[in-house]
Image 1 (cartoon, rainbow, N blue to C red):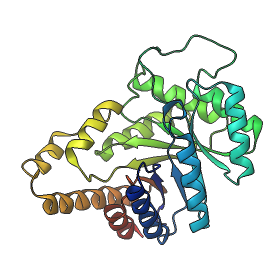
Image 2 (image 1 turned 90 degrees about the horizontal axis):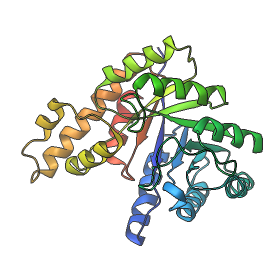
Image 3 (image 1 turned 135 degrees about the vertical axis):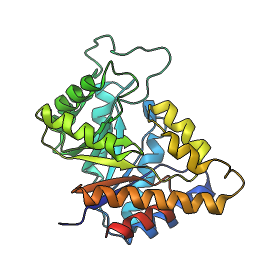
Length: 279
């Protein structure tokens, strides 16, 4: 059985200190020779300039392919076309195409407007009409918060693939059975393209809980029990977080998963240990 490949996600830094930490993290994880790396993009383009700057610095550091996250919500097709033309000309050939977080003054689905994309599948098609990008999209094993049902999510994912997406990167999860069940549902719906699991190292349990609540990711009771009473014991919490990510990665590899995507949170230590365990 072949070993899985892997990729890493980073986000644009907001301070000089965090920028230096990101460069060190990139240097460490690039040594593991990932298949690709990606850089996030805030809803409505709030970190657009930071995304481009971060990618440019990474491209100077390494030859590893780098993809840019890109959201379409609240941005006109013309503005998106201008932006993606710039990405293509600067050598960025991989886009992680996403809707983006829904502002409070909008509801899903959107009112049809010819100047804007309404669905990610339309966005994917538009990107590929513009340039021959490699396209990754999101997938939600536990249902997107705005979706009516899990099967509605599966249907939407199928449309993204039909539009030309090359792979899906899932929202993070902590119970691998959730992912395996999602794969079965997708297979039953005729989806054959890669659905790569996204894994999150737990660097701060309380912060992660808030993040998980916002994106609809379930935190099992057993995980709460693992970190109970460790607020003032960072070394023990780090040890448990490392063991959990290693075990989750090993189980995915054992079950034939071909590629794992890690949400690094711009830190290398836990992710590096997980990758070493499956390499």
